[in-house]
Length: 282
Image: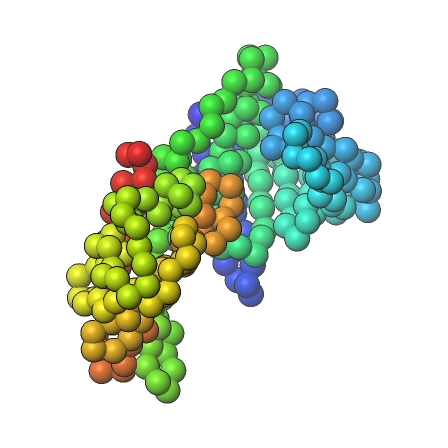
């Protein structure tokens, strides 16, 4: 991979992923590779149809998806410099800048799901690697990320941190993290393969230091487990729909105002980091 730069910024509820790659090819050749459907089919994550003009229609379809594809609209088309378009609720802007005998390719992907950023970044990383192979005249052959690249981006963008929300009744800790294995695999890791029932003790995988558990109060395999805390509060683990790799983990804990939440945040962060590492090992 050529030298590159990847950054993430969030403002007004929207997140922008910016990725830069230096390519040893002139802008016109790069332009053709990112705008012509025959070239896009070899590296882009979907098949693309495009009316290459501002306001032109775009279509995106995944082979074998068995359902209609998504649509978009071209927002900029300035050959051979800028190609930008919407894709559902997302916006992608590709800019090509001459640099010596080659080009600097900059992608800015703007979206609403901040915690999906590691999935998007790892996906584009592999797509742009395939684009480089195409431009170099090589066979396009890029393996699927097994999770290592995703987790590296998650750490780079600091997406594993929790937050604390305060109210008149107390506080709520919240973590949201995209996982890289199927929900059933995550559930098996958390339960150590044991059956979990309401009223039963909580499997150790769902606990962390400084969170003395009461009995399980709600369970729905493999999507939800909640339990009461001693003497007050609740912990909820939810495995919701995620962004391609696996489920989206949403972990919350509530408690009274007189508890120290800093230690709890650190404890849960360590617990979820350990879980992510265990899933990679599997």
